[in-house]
Image 1 (tube, helix red, strand yellow):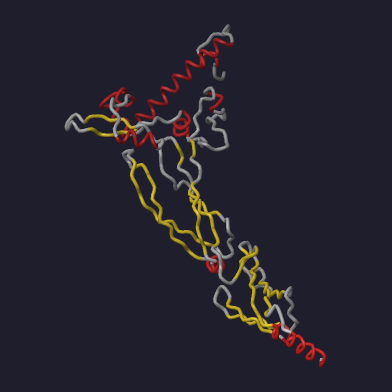
Image 2 (image 1 turned 120 degrees about the horizontal axis):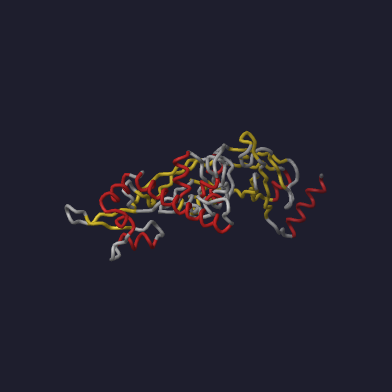
Length: 321
């Protein structure tokens, strides 16, 4: 015979719905006590404080607010409790933050309890913890992402580059105390990345009790360029040329973003609206590294006005043709 559900809930067969709920809440409260006991005794630091000061030592707050208390509460961290060392009389700090029943249950039974995610946590028998314990589950809150702009030159976005970013953040040491650490993050900018591209470093924000550290997100920003303009995967350049070359032939000399000298001969008559397109000389395409966009050459023909003598001379020249 399987489990006796009446015995598990400690009710008889005549129990009604209210009796079941009362029994359930009673056992639920007991299980929470068990979870808290396990949480304290399985943590060497908490157990040491408990053995020395008891439950009150863990839970009661020191009567006067210390600087740690103010700092911790201002930044939303764990609450700080102070105790006096029996030998030296000097105050020591300890941070007590009992885990939820889900966290303890997950550790004991090896189940993947979701903290702040979209999936539902369950026991080893497949019963959701929300159903088993009256939907009192507390999800870990994750802070909003921290976004920072990462300026890049057009040359860097064309060739790709590696950028080192130094960050400073708050972490919790082995004794539960906040401390500041500095890290160097390396960002590998890929050829062809566009403005608005995001690079995410998970959980690189400040560590605080009861919350999941925020992600650190760098957002690519494109610096203006003195020669080229970008249009998606294409590049656009405008060259100023005299009207004589516009009519008789012109070779555009261009220094590319990777330092090559590009000569583009143009045999057509160049009008103010004429554009020359050079295939494959635009920006690299990130999803297809072997391919590039196009380069469009636009022209600014000068002078824009001619004298009567100049017009007559051009007319005579064209008449000879």
